[in-house]
Amino acid sequence: MSEFNRQVTPLHQSAKEPLPSGGWIEFEDFPTTIDVLGSLLYFLFQDHWQEVGLGHMVDGSVLELEFPQPPKIIRLYDGYLTVVTEGWHMHLCIEENQGGPESTTPKELSRKRLVSRAALYRRFNPRGQVRSWGIQFWNGAGERMMNVFLPNPFVGENEDLLPENKPDLRKLGLYEQLREIYVQGSQLIPYETNPLKRPFVSVCRSGRCNPTRNWQPIYEALRSAVAESGLEVDVIHSGCLEVCKLGPVVFYSGDKTWYTCVTSELAQDIVYEHLCKGNKIKSHLYPPAKDL
Ligand code: FES
Image 1 (cartoon, rainbow, N blue to C red):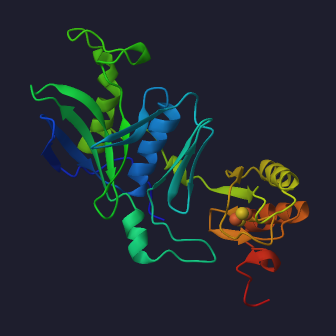
Image 2 (tube, helix red, strand yellow):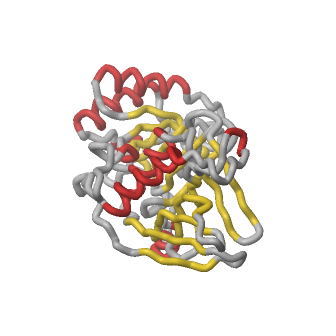
């Protein structure tokens, strides 16, 4: 794994596109490496969730979602960033999606799914006045993916439009900060490591692989073993981990390892033997170890 670099190398790439209703949109591109996208999206959704919205905007349709509370989950699994709130969740492919132990994602599909272009944008009206600020993502086929909507100085409480001559210009602070970090490279990324790359160990709570859904004891065993060993590893429970049989299924993101038929005792061994010492528990690996 390459070392996290807090300095973004500017692309010096911008574009201006006319809007069908008059006016235009101006894009300033920034790199789409996992360290850039991971730190940017974590910064927005974890640290600035109250200020941003997300959704999409194409001719004939606009979707805009807000965060009523801090997200419950922000997690990177197999290339997809998942953000879960009380009322909705989203997935965005920001790293190569490889597939689970049962199926490998074809290279071409993996390239198509991945965010391959990202840009800060400003939308101008026909009179040349900026009217909205945001971030646009495109996939590997050049199709528009989701938008992040950045604070708008013309919009007040309850989405009311402020008087034309009284914008709240303090709201542009977030856009300007992002531009300095990600477009100009004149400010450093505000993290020492990629916050989405912190390793985690997860137990699947779905009934498809574990009909009794008795995942809680395994989760608790993982938690207490990780706490006791002092490891910097998150312990979570999640939806499908792509094995879908022989549950309870446990996944360790550090070296992408799946375990099946996990018991509380095995959960502790996974932490003490595998996570602490690097010795995988071969008898429960998935796919099964060949030399057993
Ligand atoms: S449902 Fe548990 S791994 Fe798929």
